[in-house]
Length: 589
Image (cartoon, rainbow, N blue to C red; front, top):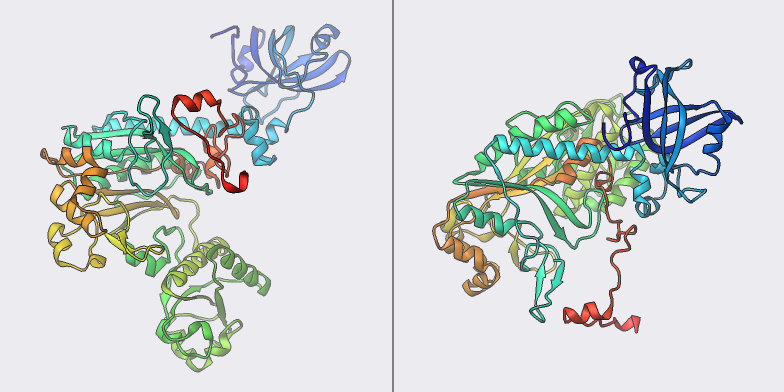
């Protein structure tokens, strides 16, 4: 063993009865029966062991000692008369001859009961994260994270990938999110940036002659928090392959990820290769989202022409109307009203509905507007008695978003339409190279500006930019986007032409991406890659609803580390050293 203990608190078994042992750990609780009889639970990283206090001397050693203090207990192992089948050490107990306090907990009251920390307010949990992590239910997720990362590393190495770490201090580049900036002490008025991703470095590695690269890469983005996104920093399984196509990337991911999900996940089933491939525009039409949950068998049907001009204003001609048909729906009117309210909160638009009665008639909801075309509706949608039909309507984006939200919530509401106990992967492919920006109204890159356009230079020069597709792909699992990836644009001439479309000339490209552009001018191989998010993968594998549950020391929703007190003010001298002056906003003056 190691340190001063002979065994950990999950190690002793009935075969150890009669041995003298020393165990160490945290004083979880003490149930006193009398002044010379009590039952102490000692907990360490591995588990817990019962210590039976049978003398006044041993009880005296615990007087004034608060729970969560660390103890060393030396004593004899014996068989328990009242066994506990719920713990691994439940057949034995330790009778102490010596109890020593190793580290005092000076507080009589804790911010929360350790084993019930999940019930505490999240900010309190994060402030006292060191106590929260003592809860086995919380600790086990961090242990799981370590095991998953180890398995991913092993799998990537078996596929011939070399782990290479890339810089943390680099230059700012336009990659879609806000940078974290680091002022330079030696170069006044200039800044480093923490990398949003190792994108340029890994592409430069390919031009440097490395064939297969990966790393568990830290990435830094100044973004708002979501349930599946942590503000500040996150980790990704970053990979890149030289002389590779989209098919090469798919083959590696389809071989690496499913076994890891199946081995460590709350579900033991995961998609096998090949994953379903769904073109981006088809995904929106069929599922209302580019992150479909394929465990749900519900899809959208376009009923724009069928429902148009029925006298119901939201179905006016020109609006997009989508319908979801649900069999085996037994929800009451109260359930339907709650569903509609929940969908409206998430999507921002109100959904509509009707049912098909036992006699095949349309009933409830908006059915009165559809009676003159009921037969055609039943035939087109293939609906039968007791079917429930949910409807979204509005402009294209609103109809898609509301329809996608309906599918998600109806899948969770009607068990027969969701195969929940599995991990279903899919690829979203054929993303548009460009789109019209919602805010700017100008042509912008739809996804990654470093992606190779399908059709190469010919497509850029001769086709409508909005019709050009990119060799861009997303990996989705159970409705969660795990990653974006692409076949990279490694040709300097094609790169310049691609950026011209969004108003950036050759000099802009050279100025914004000097190292990568110059490297490509020295003979770059075709290359492709992807970077699945580690935190999101662990969240799915662990069956958690919040990504913060699988990060050892996460920030809160406001991008604050409440345990360490970050972000925090610093001394003026520190600011002077890096040539920074803090200017207050008008409202703070």
